[in-house]
View 1 (cartoon, protein in one colour):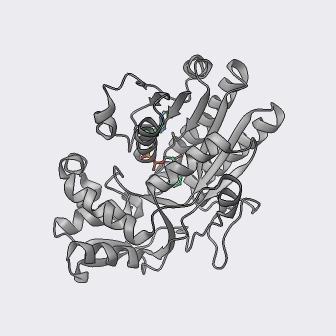
View 2 (cartoon, rainbow, N blue to C red):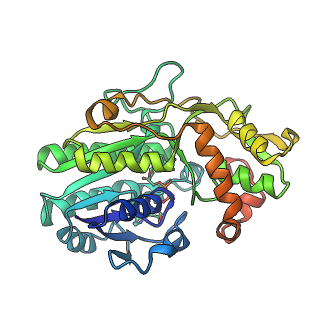
Length: 334
Ligand code: NAD
């Protein structure tokens, strides 16, 4: 199979590409990424020499480029997106460009140059908004709370509308919060590991009671693989490991694994619209595609902490002002 992966130089896309090339000897992958915020060529340095892998620097909003690439492949998997929620509050227009116009451009490129191509669009649990009790299923209404999640919800609607009108072979995945190797240091889990190992304070928004449903990135990547190979056109698949944790619990678990004191924790001003709890029901992907997570939080977080400790050179190069001097949401945080 020839695959076009967009946004493959970021956290989840790079994990997907490494996993896919390792698992499927006969697959060839073109990785298209604009090398924007959150991307890092070091994420895939080790596979650069693989003849089955090609990297192209480019933007998913470039219609001619997308048409040319889509024509050459059997499937497209779209990870490309502006993904940092805090940044979407300070500069939402970039999010509309990549997350909405970008997806529209991919859909139009598919429709005009290769309407048979398989398309998997990567979305997020954040499109449903927050929920105090119970868990969202794929049939629930979309109620986004931030410019980021609003742009992702808009993209999901485009995919469903185009797939139905033009009979495209497109599916959507909606996954919970990922963690694991190669996650950008500004995000909660890597930032906590990095700052704690440097002996710095760990900032937590509000009271730390916000609940996130955490999944080890390899489990998400296996879910995307399952949807790519076995998912039905025009279907949405939630992906969750059912590991709901408050932010404070996540931070305390990491401090314990590192042998650090909880006195490092420091509470900071909450961000506007901060969702209280995310929770997904992923029964559908389990029932229909036989996908199940392999890592519980305890196992995944231990592997993640070990990875960051063993790969200090990787994250040292990315430690920036926002990691060293985290400030409230206005200037970017987790
Ligand atoms: P990331 O920011 O690490 O990676 C995104 C990549 O997309 C970057 O390499 C960036 O350069 C690229 N990109 C952005 N705009 C582009 C454009 N216009 N053209 C080409 N490339 C572009 O993000 P991530 O955490 O790896 O997330 C990947 C996808 O998964 C996103 O769509 C995100 O919404 C979704 N998702 C993420 C999570 C999570 O916890 N990180 C959870 C659920 C869903």
